[in-house]
Amino acid sequence: MNSIEALIGLQETDGLIRDLEREAKDLPRRKAQENARLKGVTAAVEIAKSQLEALRVRIRETEEDASASRQRVKELKTQQATSNSNKEYQQLLAAIEGLEHEADAADARGFALTEDELPRLERQLNEAEAKLAAERGGVDGFCDELEGRLAEVKAELDRLAEERKAKAALVPPKSLLYYERLRTKRWPVVVTLNADAVCEGCHLKVPPSTEQMVEHKMELVACTNCGRLLYRDL
Image (cartoon, rainbow, N blue to C red; front, side):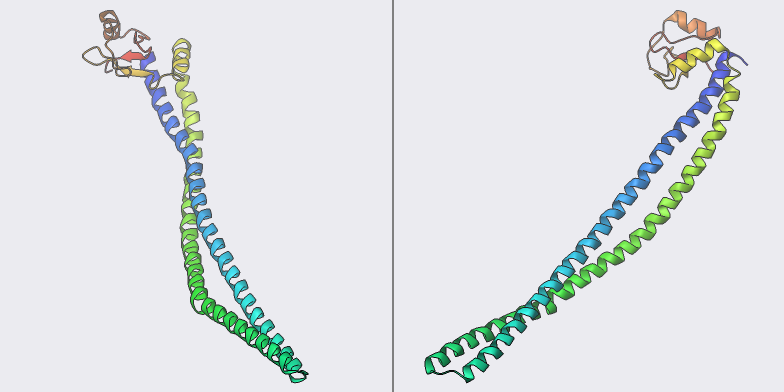
């Protein structure tokens, strides 16, 4: 096995490692996206609960307003029964009528809230909670799948790391050093030189002298444009 053949084998393993490393980085991001989406659905439930509770407070307030007005009416009627003059009686009567009107108005507001707004908000909350339950089940299942895949990827990366060590040991030190330096800047490092003397890495034509060295299968023939290592079909 010559240097190019050994490097091609190493590059194949490195390609698999690169793909898996990208996937390993992407899986947590996808999980975070799903959890963020679920957080949005959860927030919708909390908003619906808050709106429903606020409405119930308003309904209680209207009931308290009506009750307070009617209590005051009772007090004024008691006072009216012992009034000493017609003027005082008429004044108390006007106050009573005003309070009864306020009580009726409070009852009307409470009825409207109870009959119209309350069912709407209760329905809205039920729908939001149902959606959350459905989404949570889907997200939890999907996140479990992502976690399982991440474990598989990590295990495969461990295996490939050992495989890479074995393949790197087959490459001459000088060739390996050149490859290791270049792979941080160019990928792939080892590419074919096609029939038109064009590098399949940078897609530029190389000089005839470079093509001849590749034809003669000389060790470590680099593209004069991008520095990638060239070979013709082995």
